[in-house]
Length: 124
Image 1 (tube, one colour):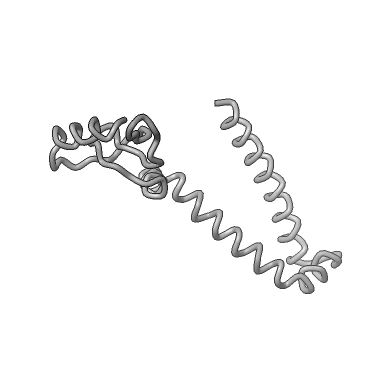
Image 2: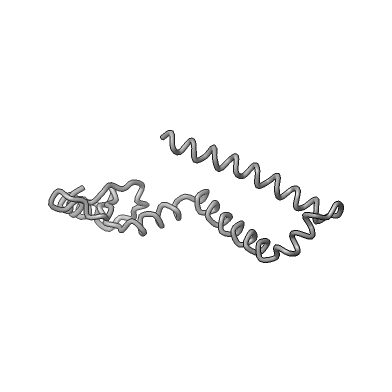
């Protein structure tokens, strides 16, 4: 969408609220500016702003990102306690061993699901 088209769209849209459902590349003099324009209201956004809006508008994606960060923090903590984890992993019995085994199984399932999701996204 050219700057002129975006300006005309903004003027016709007015002060109405907009949830910015879709974006197009912004063009000036036939070249992309690197910014994006809301196709509904004509407002311009940087890539970061557009990505932040997309995340905020999608509760599943937002929840996924929060959980991903939490998992990373927990795995970092386990890595920092590698010595203790080694003792647990070499143990033959106990509650900690069962928890570690369950974690390993969950990780295997997570890897399979992530691989499948990436494959599906690559097909589109």
